[in-house]
Figure 1 (cartoon, one colour):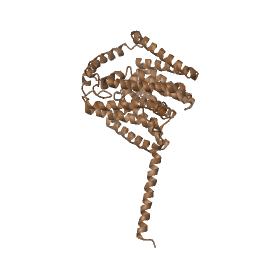
Figure 2 (spheres, one colour):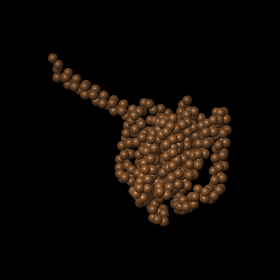
Figure 3 (tube, one colour):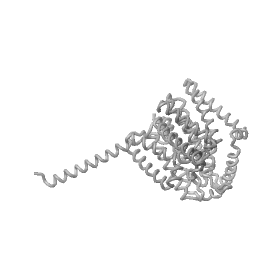
Figure 4 (cartoon, helix red, strand yellow):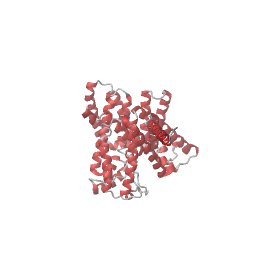
Length: 438
């Protein structure tokens, strides 16, 4: 005969075992490669389409999506913690920059806006870190390829609809409907410069997919053609310059990867010297370069806003005004930086100057150091590793860092998430902390 106490213990033990089984199933799901792939696609897709999502479902909807993704990403990372090499997990330069941006809330003239902007930046940072730690470089390239194919194709379809079928702009998406005049087009990115920069990153991504045979050849060629057409239709002088620099970087890497290892350092230094000389020549002949790129109007607009920013920088040169990321049209001193039409720009149209403005001299030194470390590490990996996939972070950083001279896109959303991915990947492959441990 079974006593009531024995029966109760059996039920309790069964319930405990059931809870353990459920907990184990949840952990297994969170740690699964399938969830890691879905999270990577969702994170990259949300970052790339942040502007379109904000215009369609509002900032509250976008923040809701980001919050869910961040919670899932943290849970998935926690479930995979035993698989992570904790030595050199994050680059110190990235943590230092984020730390200084966070500290700036102490002297910010718009503390609530700074707090909100830090949370927004932190969301994209967290997603970038988790994707970088949970996916290999080739898997990241494939995720970008899948997202960019959809975004560029959808952008061209909408441009055809606006510019050819209804011959009217789609104002809430920022599409002017200029496809019948062969551009400039904005697609789902809001501006032609951002659309063109995304297309340049797509060229690098689709080219990498082709070289690594990650996708069928027909799909790879069609994707590359789509990206090339998107670059051309953006009709952006900034994007033209970025595309030219990326093309030169591709040629340099092609030659460098064929040099014998013992001669590689010499050629690396030679390339650095050539790049510095080329930069000096471009600077000295900047007037002629601007004319060739048909960018006189765009440059005059930038010069106007840069001159006004410099006056504000002089007031708080060391510490800056406080982090804000994309400018807020309802916050001082940004209200006073409106252009003649009364519109406040989304940024300083130069990421380096923008950081100087927001985080001061200390912030811009940390920022430049962080970018330099990420690029040097990525470039060295691209030159020494056999797999062509290691060229992707280096070439993407070339595009982002070059565009940062004329746009502030690097400081937010998809460009920032992409930079964090490249930065973390490069730091883990060439970690000085791992070198000291070994």
